[in-house]
Image 1 (cartoon, helix red, strand yellow):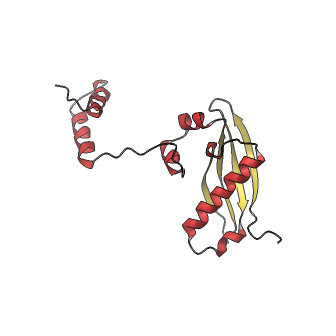
Image 2 (cartoon, helix red, strand yellow):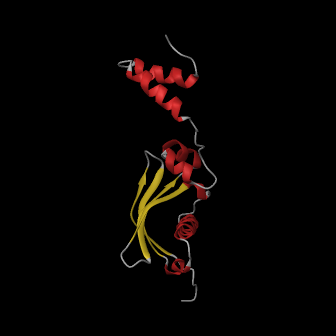
Image 3 (tube, helix red, strand yellow):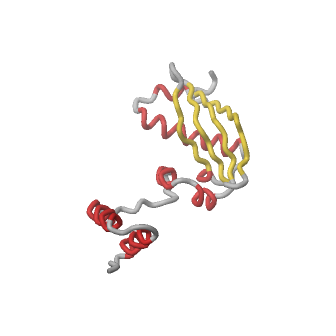
Amino acid sequence: MADTKAVTIRTRKFMTNRLLSRKQFVSSGTYLAYFSLSSFDVCVVQLKAELKEKLAKLYDVKDVNAIFVFNFRTHFGGGKSTGFGLIYDSVESAKKYEPKHRLLRIDNGLATKVEKSRKQMKERKNRAKKIRGVKKTKAGDAAKAGSKKK
């Protein structure tokens, strides 16, 4: 092996999803060099970053933040993983269609987590229990705004 940090990527089941303005695929990768790292978390973060860079080069993506790789499962014996990948046409469409938890996991943070106290969440839940039907969502919105409806 000439390159000790060699990561090979194979994509299959590739399809273009025009409705969600993205390309989606199943990705398999081999990464034998990453087993020398002591911490597993560092290994996964470095591997995903390298996968994103290689996919950006392979599919001519301008912004690496428009690439999402997730749900990787290691094969028995290690050295090979299979997971899913999404390449959005733009970062704006990624923000629009991608779930919040994946947007929060990105290093630069395309979304910010809203910190709410436990007490506020419980009060909102209990207020919503007293109301029926469509008014229930309105009660939740009023609680978000900070004004109480009587």
